[in-house]
Image (cartoon, rainbow over all chains, first blue to last red; front, side, top):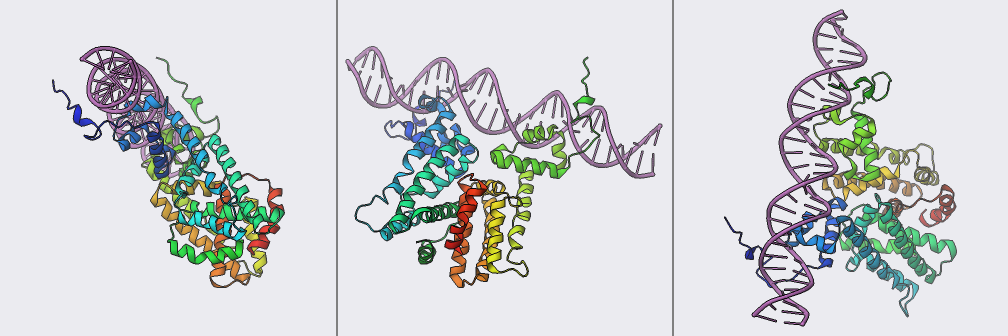
Length: 195
Length: 195
DNA sequence: GTTATTCCAGACACTTGTGTATGGCAAGAG
DNA sequence: CTCTTGCCATACACAAGTGTCTGGAATAAC
């Protein structure tokens, strides 16, 4: 009665290294970026992690609960990068604007795909949409502060912040992949127009 | 042996009025907007149309073929609105810019949700992404022409067209719903900054 | 060295979607 | 009126996903 080779089924021959709740969330994040919410399937995530679904329900009650956790994760980590720019001590308005552009162009700390994926998700989930709105308003507020430091007042600072932010969101929404160099070449024009 | 009330099962008591291929595509379009590609299910569309899936496979070989038809439909009808603006006879650059803003704000001919939905779709389908890219480039070309009519030259016209277009895409991507009045109030600022 | 806890494998029942096959009504052609 | 063609209902087979349950291995606790 063919006993299965139980031991070698393990994720490697390494010592036991349990996944933990965060690993499932991270896998869900990647899946969301690559395939959208429809791609977040417990089976697929398990395969991606090199296990079966067995352990999933130890961490989460349901797939729905995983999605909630994923959204929370995004909300927690998506405003910090913008918040610290206007609050940077001893920097001029021009410096801060440059910091903002760098944040977007370098794409090191800020991952636009992560952002875009959540935004897609929001289009079909009012709950997610609400969260995204809150984050957007916070970010625009921070950018508006930058334009105030540049000397703009009132509504003009607000509209300039909007144009800047919406433009960037649109850029990512288009799914363009321009080289870093091309984007740097266009930067002076952007600076002239916006700031 | 309980014969079913066959006659009254019909979509109404009206005379027979077959759906036709386009009706299925239109239903798919609505479903895409409301729920994304995952929401495009043959069963749901049938329910929406008041029939069963019986007739679907008379028009389409598969669900996949419906999606292809839907993408084609979008590509065919999504550049025309932009194309005719720069080609409008006897209009100044300022007029044309205003026509562009009107096209976006009125949201009569141009349905931003239809656009956004396809863009979301493109994020997880390279085939769709390709089509969307082509459309975007065409549109930006038309807008660039408007800025040339406004007197801008070379790269500046190009970047201004980009900022304008990307900003608008971003605006819709954010899923904001501002009143027409609010948007009209902000318009002078936009005009000052962009044109 | 027991014992308990943590995490995972695999089988099961259930649900929901696709595509096929068959039969039948309705409307126009003859 | 008859017959053909267009369009739809319904039943069926199949595939794929979710959530539950049971058992078992690996590690930590004692």
